[in-house]
Image 1 (cartoon, rainbow, N blue to C red):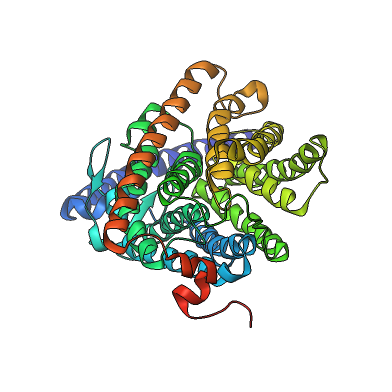
Image 2: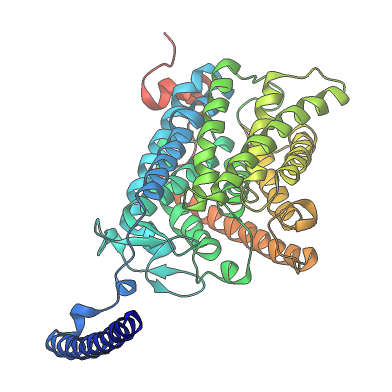
Length: 462
């Protein structure tokens, strides 16, 4: 009896399961038909896949790039202004700081009017770009590409690159302070940015630029900023002529204290300069950050050590000079080197820059007032070429296993050579235009009295 009940229950269960399965199949088919009909009634643009949506800036990356931009501004005012100002004689302190501040402000206005378009505009070729003049078409929703699939707000990218243009123009002034008219400086900056800086920025940093396509390594501006500014500074100094009394009259820095303060501000701001050039808050930025620490530390100490080896005392001025030399050299290598490669690069650049300042300049007799060429020009060349070496994985760099140092050095040398040529020719044109318009140089009386009073009617110290 129990066996019959069990068998009967099993048969009943089987028949119920089969009925349920049939019902489920019919229901699923009906749902599918309903969904197909509903989908057919919806316009195609409404059901585009989510991947087709426009990329949205990561707030963290945007926030980091805003911070980096402000750090670069700090490099100019007050960093560079105090660094250069402290190195001049007291009668020219205010003039030097005013020229730097006004140059930066003028560069910012030029950048948003036509500079951004010439360097990074939507139209163009391997040598120059155009479009987006006066920032036409850029809105708060516009984005700029990074080096990954991320984007940042285009206004942030515009601002970040704007500070690079501003500081590069200001760096050139280190070779011509204490004798160049304020009006001449303003005319020079307008012409120089237009025919020198913007084209070089496009060649090296814009995706269509000839040296970008060739694979030239310049993470944060070894060619675009430092070689460009340093070579331009030398050309401007040669055309302008020596300061009255140079080199027979002593012209020591009037305040190494202020120069030391400026050095510290430059080092801190340089983290925005180097780590910010990753365009994201990522591992590449982290690599640039540690390299900016250790290359700079190495260079500051090796400059003082070189002074000692050459029979002098290790000096505060030497420490400050070494710090800047290290920062300059690591700029193109910031994200393109391992930390120990950066240490070696900083040391080598510091030693070479020391001899450029202490031996080469006196031997050739040119008056590069604050050693803009000796540190930025020479240090930039060492850094740009050295980046081709330290990029190799055998030195801890991020290059692949198939990386070839020799071919990369050729590319680096071509970028360096082109930068030198463009800077030389463009600076000569800009200086002669400034001379034609303003007369270029202050009168001998103003130079003796000091440009603070002669050009601005004020004194830095009363």
